[in-house]
Image (cartoon, rainbow, N blue to C red; front, side, top):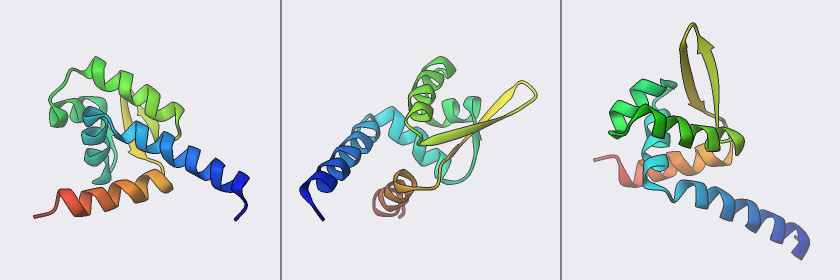
Length: 98
């Protein structure tokens, strides 16, 4: 692998890890490992207001880590398959399983 490609991959990895470094975002994403969740369900599981969850989800959506679907007035979020999901599953296996 040439240095340019390595630099690009290192930058992408650093951006992903920066997104995961926030404890609230990390808890939100761990909740979504189990499947798609509504904003309200995520807020209850994480213990923060829905407005806080929505702000974090907006960032995660912009970064391509989560996607959403709307059903009536409810919005459901899920992890996008890819590097973030793989990292989160590993973190969940290491830190969240008994």
